[in-house]
Amino acid sequence: MAGNSTDPTQQLNDYIRTMHDQGILDDNFDQLLALRREQNPRFITELISMFTNDAEAYIAEITNALSLTEVDFSTIISKLHQLKGSTAGIGGHRMYQACCELRVAADDGDKDRCDELFLLVKEEFNTLKQCFDSISEMRRNIISNGTRRRRRRPL
Image (cartoon, rainbow, N blue to C red):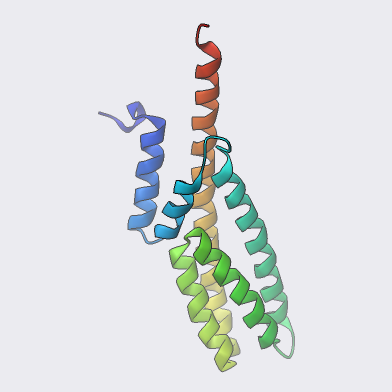
């Protein structure tokens, strides 16, 4: 059958599987999905929002540290450590790998390589953010549809 007739939950599962196949997500994201509870169906959406806000702040701080005349590698390493940990925790596989590569360049004090790899980190962040935006939208639709169905049930 056509993809449009697929159950919204199945569409979400298929999308997540595709993100796994592309290496964007890893098993840590699946573990987070398993933690969601009926009491808080918005758990994943809230977690994604927190991750995105934190990651944007870390990226801004790394941008500032890289733009200084004398590059502040200690700040880059510190903020990158936080970004890498957040990314690993939420299951952003390709972004995590990019952060690891940037960490090596920062440890080596290689400004040119840091600039190059930081572009990759930002690209992977944008890809991950788009992935999470899609997942969040699908989750909202599923929750909204479930709420509407419950309201329509006869007593």
